[in-house]
Image (tube, rainbow, N blue to C red; front, side, top):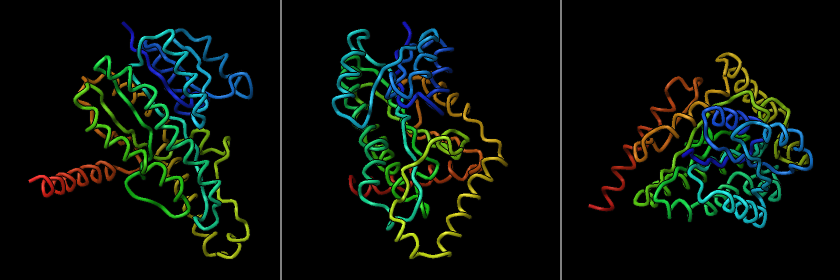
Length: 285
């Protein structure tokens, strides 16, 4: 029997590409997106016409929308085998120049949206004693960068969710994994989708040219590397497919997929795991 896979944020980017990749592989894909009768109507119709794809209208920032979407899902499917939390918004700017409202917008999608969907699927996964949760985070989820603090803080939070759940759910046959991508030419990064950026112009002005130049240099560096390494979003979709095909219980906690990092991301993950093991041993010995 084909696995049932729920993906958030499928109107563009990694989400859409993963939908196409997994459907082609023969899985039943529930393609979650908002505004299927509004601005996403065309892409919703496009995906719905593909074999193995069912489009689900869901706004992950809204409790009622998530509840209604999964009630509908479970009317047609006894359980969800795989949840892929892909939907996200980016954000750029000085921390002081962010209003709390803007930061909350980032967290509603990137952090609370992840919790909403996880809590929606876990009862069926626990009953089945089987499941896989994949959270798309960031190549910088283990550290931070200037001018991206709220965005990366939200991704830090998802890393914490992923790591903690891996232990909480192990006895129930459910794997929890994060994919850590680098910078890829998706709509989030090519300007097609606007981010939730700093909105206090007066504060930005007070920081002057020095901050503006640093921010511009950081952006140029990230996007320059993206072009230099010919970053292909299909790598992420293929990585997700690889995780799904892996034997339950044998999946890694983190899967870094960032050619630009040239192995330093893997080195960081391995070093952090070693240090954590030592820390845990000190508290449990």
